[in-house]
Structure formats: structure tokens, C-alpha cells
Amino acid sequence: MTMMKTFRISALLALVTQLTACAQDNNHYEKSNTFKEMNNTTPATQNKQTEIATFAAGCFWCVEAQYQQLKGVERVESGYIGGHVDNPTYKQVCTGETGHAEACNIYYNPSVISYDELLAAFWVAHDPTQLNRQGNDVGTQYRSAIFYHNEEQKQKAEAYKKKLNEEKAFHADIVTEISPYSKFYVAEDYHQNYYNDNSNQGYCMFVVKPKMDKFKKVFKDKLKEAAH
Image (tube, rainbow, N blue to C red; front, side, top):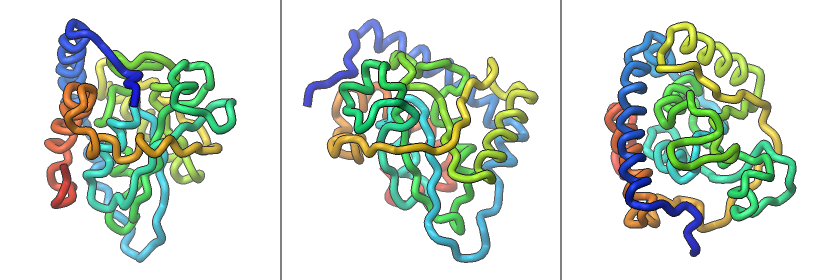
């Protein structure tokens, strides 16, 4: 596979600095009352069928790897959503001209993990104050977005975003887009389970793993036993 996300050593050093800064910002978020409210929500008591949450938070390799660790998450599917081009390829989406965002469908058991808890994880998984970028990944395809599947998801996403901004849980206002779920195009096979299959690849080592390590510390009580 030809790597489309490449960068020089100087860019890597800048990225490490940026990730450190993001971690500091998120530490404030993690102490916020709104984060605690989301993260301590009790899942549904009755048995329910698998539900879906859809998030865009930068490169989908990162998002997939982080959510795969959580108890109650049954499957994560990487793909493209929110654009105007039918059946887009990764190469097309990377141009930033299709309107699509790299995103993940999170298939979860609501009796084990709530949508609120998934939202708590969403705002930890990336920097939601960055517009159309995450670190050195720049473009609308890397935008922060929540694609809601029903009115309840919409209301919760909007309410928590409002509370977090009012609470000044981050160093700047959250710019996360909240839009209805539309046509989701599943990404090419090699993008699925990417980190687990390519953990020694450069982007995975320098970008995905640091995010994974931080994510595991924040959600240490909610991880699957066999989480990577």
C-alpha cells in the first residue's frame, strides 16, 4: 500500500509537542462536571439490540483503534460520510474535495455502554477545538463531527457540546459539527482494523499509539480485558 500520510522528522517533533498540548487541554476537560456526567451515565437496564453511533475525529485509524478498546463496543467500521461524491475512494477523500469526512460507525450494546459514555470518549479521542484538522492531518476530511442517528442522539450531542463550551472545558470553543447521519460508504478493506494489523507502521507508532495510551489511561475501568 502506498502511504498517503507521510511527514518529515521535524513534523513528527512538532506533532509530539502538539499532542502534549492537547493532552493538557483534555485533562481540564476530564475534570469538568459535564465529562463526569457523560462518563458516569448508567447504560440501559433492559436488553436492547445493537445500536450505532457515528463519529468523525480526524484520521479514522485513530478513532477505530480507540473505540475498539471499550467494553460494549462490538464492532467499529471505518468509512466516509457527509460528502457529495458517490462511492468515494480513499485517494479521492484525501484531496478534501469530496466533502466527506473520515468517520467510524460504532456498533455498541446499550446495556453495557451508553451513548453518553461514547460521547465522553469522543471528546477525549481528539481535539474538538481544531477546525478541519487534527494535528498534521489537515483538511475537511479530518473535521470533528457527530452524525446522529435519531433525535435522542442529536439532543444529547447538542446539549453536551453546549455545556462543555459554557463550562470552558477546553482552551477554546468546540467546533464539532453535529449533522444527521447520511449515506455512509465503507472504506477499503485495508483500512479496517488498521492499527491492530499495522502497529509497527510509522503513522501508527507516532500518532495512533500516543492517542491510544492516553485514551486507555482515561478509560482504564471501561476497557476490554484483551484491549491492545
